[in-house]
Length: 612
Image (tube, rainbow, N blue to C red; front, side, top):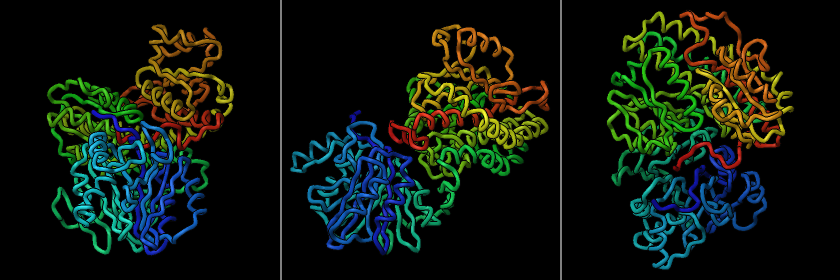
């Protein structure tokens, strides 16, 4: 496959309003900045029929300053904007969006990847087109320009241009000559909305929630012209405009309130998120109707397909299913699914916060339609939701911080509840056992609040002792291992320190060589008796141990219970110590803050990984 440069995971905003559009574009870009923040730019039609383009290789705040300082023709109410995260190619102004055609008539913003960009560029250059950037997206502007030279209809030009593309795209095209605006999407998210203020386009409905109460998500192959009336084409055929969907995000949910950053806010929201989820699903998990309503066939094996934090959540769900129903499970890293062989009777559970994770979508393509797919996502209008046979909404609400926190917790709770319901529906467990399990889930909000309060007292001083360490080990056993992995991932993402998670029993098989005087070793201690010997091994080598566990731990965040305190005679729930994730998240955030890092926008990362 060709490797076009500058492949963006980015945010798109566009609007048609009655007054100056630039404040809308800038406000929308700030809400989308979590999707990418290597560069940002806007293109606005001027009162004289030209285009004013302002771009910056800094944050949106810098772009706002540049826009305020501009002089020249008055700006109209029609414009497009973009914030970019580049996987390849230099971060420089020429590579920032929006991109233009040769004559400056057409401006384009694009999210996705044009896989045949090199071939298209070569053809266009032979025909006399001059390129100003290294990125694949610019070819779209020149394709539209070429089509307009034959027929002046912008919508037709965009249809012709996108028909030549291979890959994925969400595109907004602005014609400065007459102010027309056309959008198109295929395998990349884009929504359009209309309100009293005007028409809006965005990669994420949260970016326009302040102005729009409803929206319509484009489906693959849709091309739409905005204006007094919308013209909607699907697969080249004009169709009625789809009925709009109510926005799931209140605008106030995107504000920080009294919190210092979005990550702090979202960590603190976890108990309320869990409570809200359980209000929705508890009863239906106990009687099995939550599963029956999905319409999926019975399964004898479960395969989790995910990446990053979602993969860790999948580990927890799979561990719970094995403990509850004895069902075999496979954990598949989505980007490594090429050689995977799934057995008959396997249900695939694909997990993605955004529902647009390219590696997950491509993994499902490789499985063809041989296995039913259940999607667990925070976006019911996503590509994953459309691709799956059934969908579970993880009900986390908007999450702005790039490093996932409350979406991890929500994925675990919804996924575990679904597995409980599946076991009831298949007759593997009775409703009494299911009720006991759901009763244990219902204690999580209180346990998480307790964990947060304890961590707030203990974490800052502990972090001060390890702030200068270059690397960290995270250890766990059994049901605690997935949480150790998530803790290590959070610390890497936020603080830029090396952190590795290992099963504690593997210490003597290599990782113990890393332990030296003062090496920080974080242990998720949920009461597994063998952990104490592993902790002693680390301390004997001079390691600085931080235990997250019950009474007597360094962070005693796991509320105590009797050794057989659960209804079914166990000491640990099948999903393990979910509340431990709170101090792990707080530990990573505190270290990042003490090191001067941006906890909401870690370097080199973006929220939605929409390219492979």
